[in-house]
Image 1 (cartoon, one colour):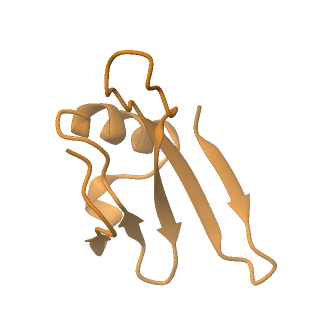
Image 2 (cartoon, one colour):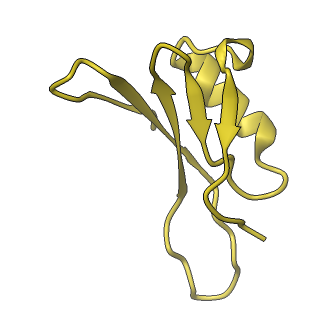
Image 3 (tube, rainbow, N blue to C red):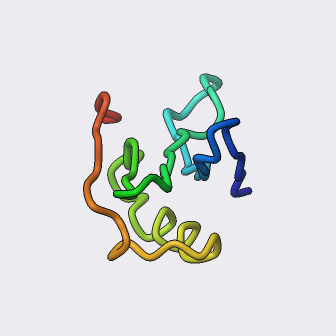
Length: 79
């Protein structure tokens, strides 16, 4: 489920949930990645290892090509 929202400034942010799998009963829900559609569009976080194809697919379904992104900002790791 891709989520789009717009800030009062007009900046659009697209939320892209990728699978979060820790196993057992410890399920925290998806990992959220965000495409910030600024003058220089960028992605905040990229999810867990192995979720790249899913992330790219969600981006494409939202009309965003990976080639449109200027950079990826990684705030923390997901092992």
